[in-house]
Image 1 (spheres, rainbow, N blue to C red):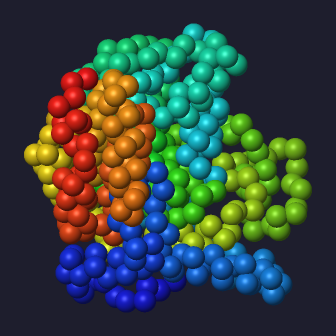
Image 2 (image 1 turned 180 degrees about the vertical axis):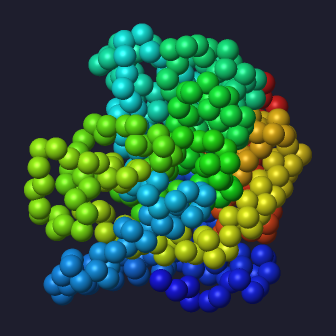
Length: 412
């Protein structure tokens, strides 16, 4: 799939400006809600419709074409995160990816896993509680850092000879803090502990090389910073780890029968597919795969190395402006944990504060500005299609909000 314009010969600013034209949702609103769901580019919409048109006209699956998009998407995501194609399988979402790994581990009663419940997404926590109830493992809970980031030091202290798994987000959904992935990756690898990462809030916006960071498995959904549709995700599994795992579910595509047709039965003695392909189950979500292939090519034509400094700069601009206006922030207090998310509010929002946040969210909505209201806080998130001018417009909207002084003076 070719982009409508070449980007390798133009400046980073021009790449971003041209990519922005692909997003029709920006024509009549300011969109700072990518951490909830990303905008879909027009080309991705067209690609999904092209699949439906091909299916409506009876294109045979054996002819390839739109039915090869799953392999294209697998390869594009692998390239984005520094993996190889066989280390990636397609999933429905992050939750499924996390559970694929957690359920495939050879748990023994008395083993333990570590998670930071206070700031981890519930999906990462419940997958471990399921193993606690099924296999008798211990789920050890780490408390977050003072700035509500993933606590690498505390997690390390909780490790022992029976620790099998650490579950962490690369960027927290609740507080927007960046995790020191390379550091925890090195510690886990040295101790033979598997590091499973929820990459929903970072992949596509922040640069990540999974092998350099020593990440063992990474789950990501298409619908946020990959600018794709719901119902599709990816799971990276380091090949050496994947080939030690027995998936909880098996299907014909999980089994290696060479080039034999998918309807060939094989025998009761089977060999699993290499790497993460052993987690493949059946036919892919082909319309979504066609859509995400366009989006992934668009992101890579701009370059995550261009997107990351752009979104970090926008977040810093908003952070400084909100602080100047007296808006309380829980993000950005530790430089190492800064990301492309800015979160207004408090660690423990007082009732009046939560109501003011709701009122500010409505104020934005009335001016066709979008941010995410979560847990009594307001979360602003940035992607390649956002601009400094939009940040300034949002700051002006805050300045004009009638209840700004009440928010700025409120003590939690």
